[in-house]
Length: 121
Image 1 (cartoon, rainbow, N blue to C red):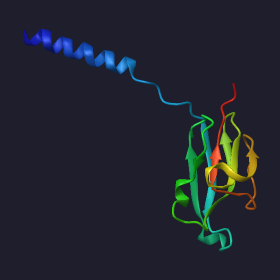
Image 2 (tube, one colour; image 1 turned 45 degrees about the horizontal axis):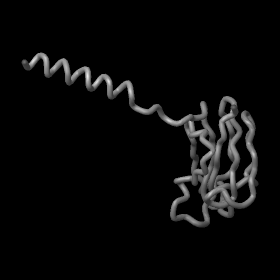
Image 3 (cartoon, rainbow, N blue to C red; image 1 turned 90 degrees about the horizontal axis):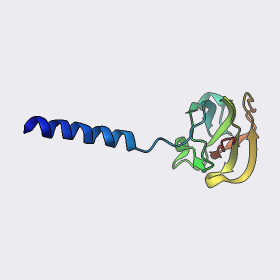
Image 4 (tube, helix red, strand yellow; image 1 turned 30 degrees about the vertical axis):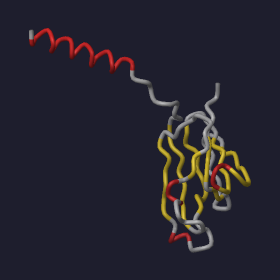
């Protein structure tokens, strides 16, 4: 009797694993950037990275800037395999937009607080 329940439980667990949703699309590669107050010396800036970021067309705010209204992401470098990144000067993808194509590194004059990536179809 116990063996039958154990086998049934194992098969049930296997069925659950097979039916779990797959993760959302993600870009392959990373986006490098610095962050901090762009009006302070570069030596005060920190390094940030988006590793395999979602490419679902949804706007994301940089978490490093939370509760730091004077801070920005600075000089994005797109090392993604085939997706462009749109960066925005304000949170929630508002403000001036800059497109950063794959393999392109923007200068420190490009500052941003949010980004989105749309997968090419």
